[in-house]
Image (cartoon, rainbow over all chains, first blue to last red; front, side, top):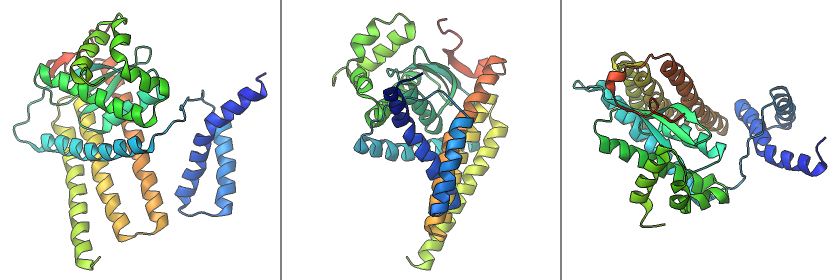
Length: 208
Length: 112
C-alpha cells in the first residue's frame, strides 16, 4: 500500500492530464456549462481508471517566455517544412537522396524525448524511425540530404530544437545537463555520443 | 475588417490549403519508398489543414468554433507524427526501404 504522501504526489502529477481531459471534453462540446463540467469529470475519471497507463513524469516546470518562443518558432517551421516538401513533390527535377540520421539528445526525460520527436516530425524534414530510450537517441529519416555537411547541419538543427524545448518545459536537471553537456558526454562509450559531442562543441562550445 | 479584404484572405488561405493537400497527394505517388511518402503524407497535409481551419475561424469566429479548431489542429499535429513513426518503424523492420536512395543509414550501424 502506498502512503498518503505518495498518493498526493501521484495526484499532483496526474492533475494536469486529468484537467486536460475535462477541458478537451468541453472543447468538443464547444461551450462551457456545469453539465459539461460534471460529465467531463466523470468521463475523465472513467478514462483514467479504465485505460490505466504508467504515470508520465511531466516535471511540472514551464517557462512562459521560452514556451512562447518555442511555439512561434514551431509555427514558422511547420510552414517552412510543408512548403519544402510540397515544392519537392511538385518539382520536375526531383531526384531522391535521403538519410537516416542518429541524433543523440542530451535530455534524460521521456517527456522531452517525446516532444522533441513529435516536433522534429512536423518541422523541416524528419520522421522518427526508431527511438533508443536508454541512450536518448532518435533515429530520424530525413528527405533531400545530398551531402555529408547537410547531415551535420540537420543534427545541430534537431539539437537546437531540443534546446528550445528543454528551456521551455524541461526540469532543472535537464537545463543543467544542457549547460555541461561536454563533460558528461565524454564519458559515454558509444560512438554517436562522441560524434554528437563534437558537433555540440562546434555549435555551443563558445557560449557555454 | 471589410468584406473584400476578408474574401481575399479567405481565398488565399483556401488556395494554400488546397495546394498543400494536392502536393501531398502528388508526393505520395512520386516519392520512391514508404519512408519518403510518409513525409508527404504528414507535413504539407497538416499545414494545409491549418490553412483551411484558419479560414473557417476567420469566417465563423465564435468561441465554440475557435476552441474546436484549436482542438482539431493540436490533435492532428500530435497524432500524425505518431502514426508516421509506427508505419516507418514497421517499414524499416520489414526491409521495405530503398537503401540505394539513402546517403547514410546510422540505424543500420547502431551499437547494440
